[in-house]
Image 1 (tube, one colour):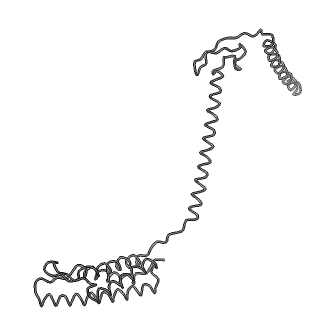
Image 2 (cartoon, helix red, strand yellow; image 1 turned 120 degrees about the vertical axis):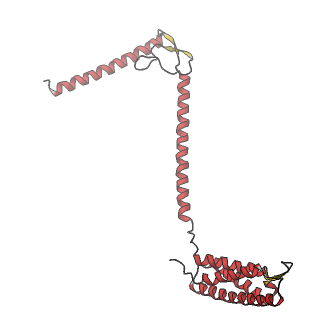
Image 3 (cartoon, helix red, strand yellow; image 1 turned 135 degrees about the vertical axis):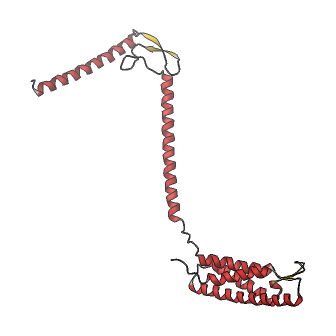
Length: 236
């Protein structure tokens, strides 16, 4: 077996010989160019199919003529630069969008979910207020009618309904507010109930022609919802 040092020396000598051969080829090529002794040949570009003149030595490492002419190589280099620039631009946009989305998510205020009691209070108060403007009693098929606000009772249901609806929007069912909803709801329910009985007596006395109006029913339903809303505790 040959000593390790001998093998290493042989390898180093081989590499030096390769370097010398490369230098010799480069010097020979330069000398040929200087003396005008170089030979040229026409080569067809594999990309654009243009025929250009090249020196015989203008080949790749395998001795095969270059696959692309100088013009195509320049265009390829330009295209590569554009692709790289677009990729960088896309990366910058993605990073900016990610950073902006995180900032918006971090700074966005948290919207609290409204309690069921508040929703019932808002709906009931609105129904009672709207019902106050509609007919509570009608005659002759609706030809003649009288709304709630034509008397004092309609103003009670209007004021109470508006109060409950507004506090339902601005408060999320605190204990004191819920008590207020129930009290106002019971008051309106009593007012609507008494008016219903009064109209019923008139209908029985007069006979056909008089009827309870839709506004009275709507105000009654809204009053009942107002009373119930105060009994619904918000979920924790």
